Image (cartoon, rainbow, N blue to C red; front, top):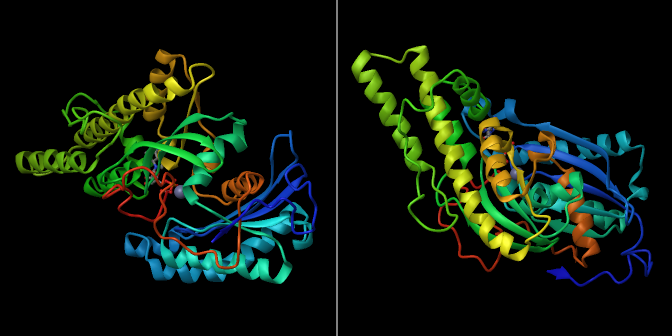
Length: 381
Ligand code: KG4
Ligand code: ZN
């Protein structure tokens, strides 16, 4: 159960909200084991003192997807090592920390539990406060870590497991405007790559293949554009790609190099178009709340896609909105975002007890209607 505002910190310091804070962050919600240390002096830009990520990509590669049991075991084995490395790189010991922040969900339950148990162990052994952070809040607050954005800003979170538009109003205040009702865009890119015999992760492979392709040759659908609002759908697009591929195979017995390039270009253009149009719609309620100094920020692995970035920039230019994309290594899963979200939320009065629960599902905006299929893969954000 979340405890109340730490009017004083664990040392009894009444000025906890003003003082310099150095947080350890832990991330283990999908297939990256990560530890990082972030320091924030009030009124100064935050500093990432260290950030260690051990990817499990090779571990899961033979199975064609993340195997939850393997992931959980690997997190449990590697978290300690990541923490030691993060402390060593920062030149700090546990005694220099002010708190431990951990991604307590959403994600694969075994992995999240590994992180939460590790953080609780540290907290119990050292007396450091424990801050359970929503992994999605980590992504959503990253532009404040990297670019010092002021609230409220509009965020498009586009990754392998999630896709949503949020107005980020405060460290613990998120208004969800819409999101995917089935696949996440990264998941769609990965499936598209599989359909076309391209390697994983599919996004970069499809993007590279699309570069010399003709995006107009195949008229792929723009799902849900006929429906009002910011909800998105990508599973129909994947089916359209499958049909186009099968039609070509039936006609000619296989795909030429150019066919594959054109299919990738058409698919990518459809994803970018849909996200850009929905971003344009999401800007309407956001601009009503923030008419001046408006910002659209992106996070998540799909934010690496240049066609998507250009499409979003065009939308922003048209509305006089600043477009912000944090560096890619902070857009994808990492623990610096968890440490930073922990600092922000701790200053905002959030601290947890040793009864902190691991939550496989944890919507950021508790007031928004539940999404049926959002982030079906459910593990990555
Ligand atoms: O954020 P991320 O590293 O992991 C999570 O899903 O949380 O995102 C990975 C996803 C994968 O589905 C990958 O195919 C996609 O991001 N991705 C891309 C690109 N680079 C990575 N999608 C489209 N274009 C890219 N350049
Ligand atoms: Zn994520």
